[in-house]
Structures are given as structure tokens and as C-alpha cells.
Image (cartoon, rainbow, N blue to C red):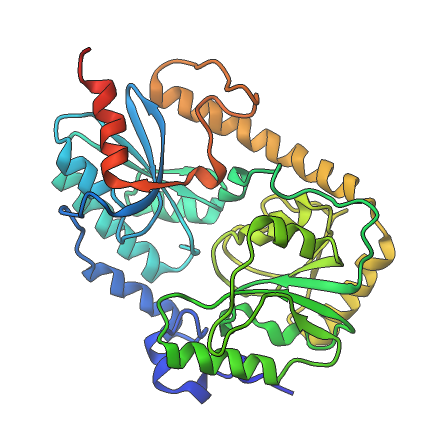
Length: 378
């Protein structure tokens, strides 16, 4: 049985327009070349809401999330403050262990350096493979797996809550997520959403096909509308994870997949297929089982991890030990960018003012004012 959601040919033109998300062979990898033609924005409206975070004001170090392409608001801020020695950090949200995507980013990185000679842009790679490939292409890159930036206080074990589901899969409804690999798991819960850039027609088709194909014992935990999914906040997601024994990661290639570490922080062991993108960086043999790309293998893997009956606190603590080591390396890296070590923030985890996923949503004007307040003598 194939779920309609995993059959890109059924959607024809939609699969061609979204080859990466529809996991179309060859075309999905080559689609990265489209990014060669993206032109940066230097004139974003001041009221534009953007995700970002100052890790330092003196010197200015700003983490730019990738939207808008190619490097978030890095082009805008570098142009607005042309003589300020900015350092921009650019996380990766999808795997660059694909030549077309890596070449496109390298070309855009070269354009950035030419346009802004006083600024530095460092790409934060999720895997050693990404780091090596990008460095060979001349990109200023540093290994900093994004999952360490998840705030562990948001995802915690919930003691004594009944676990009604064998597994839970927190993933957007898209063929790249390969939900069909979970179809033989006896019971499975889904936390999901639909891509905001998709048309209402495509959203409706994806959702209706997914719901029609749900096996017995499989349920979506989100509220649904006629043609969309209502997202859950992190409190509801944490409660949903506490209702299952195992977390699933089933895509073949994507980014580091925040859900993969959210499961572990909430005390759920993970069953995952082999993948590229970096979600395995904080895996441990005790807490994570890698299985073949086969529904039977996924089913058997879930049964095996469920049978281990690992204490949730053990899963969480094992993960946090791996995370703590990576955070120490990142603190040392940012200290080097500043040219000196900083006193630790009040929570002791970071040497800078921290925010979940290094991403605080605010207006562009607010971020500019934050920097001007430091640069302007009082």
C-alpha cells in the first residue's frame, strides 16, 4: 500500500514545482540551483518581522535565520551599517551535502563578501560532511549542529502520563517526510502542519490524501480545518510526545530536524531511518535505533525500543550530556569571534544572551535600534 502523500507523480505539476519537498529523484537535488538566481533584499520595510538574535553588540555578532533568502537580513543590515564590522551567523535548515545546493550557497556567499567587504558571514554547518564540502568551495563555515540551540526547558518528560501510542511522528505533511514508512506501526500519533508557501488547493489535496490513508490506530493530534492544520504550541507538543513510547524520524534527507532532539529531551527513544542532514549528531546507541527504509523494519524497531522501557530521565540525561559538550565548543567559538571570553549568562549554558533556536522574532526596526543604541555615544 502506498499513501497518496508519498506518490509525487500523482500531483504532477506540484511535484515539479516542489521537487525537494516531493522528493523527486534527481530533480529534487538539482533544484538547489534555483538559489543561484535569488537576489538579496537591501530595502526591507522597517516593520518587517524577522527572526534573529544578537550574540554580541561589541563587536556585533548577529544570527540571521535563512528567511528571506539568501541569507536572511544579513544583506540588509550590512548595507544599512556599511562601516560596522558585522559578523553574521547563518544556520542551515536543509542539508547541503548535495553539490547543487552547496554550489548555490557558495556563489551567494561570494557575492555577499563582494557586496559587503567590512562584514563577515559564517555558515553554521550541521554535519562534518557539510563543513568539508562548503570549505572546499571557499565558504567561511563552522560546525555548529543546530539542535543544540533547542531550549531543553520547553521539552521535558511528563511523569505518570499514560502512553496510548506506540509511536509519534512530528513532521510536516510532505512526501519528503515519508509517513508511509510508519503505516505498519500498530498505533501512531501525528503532530504536523502544512507548508505555508503552498497554495490552498495543494494544502487541501495533501491533507485530504493523508487523512484518507490513515491506518487504523493512527490519528492526527492537531485540530483540522477544511483545508489546513492548526499548529500546536510547544506545550501541546510536549504533552503529545508524553502520550507515546517512541519518536519517529523517517525522512531520507532534510535539515537537522528539530523534532529529533525534542523527542529525546522529552524522554522518548527514537527510531530513525538512515539520513543526511544532521539529526543523528546527538544520537546515542542506547536511545536511538537506526532501521531500514521499510515499514516492517520501522514497525519492528518501534517494538524493540518500546520493549527496552528506557526511563525517560535516562534518555534526556544521556542526550543533554552530548549537547553540553557541543555547547561548550560553541561558546569557545563565539568567545573567539568577540576576541575575549564573556561571563556566562544567568542559566550557565551560554556565553551570550540566549534565545530558543537563536531566533527572536521582532521588527527589523527593533533590531536596528538595538544596535544603534550601543553604537551611539551617550
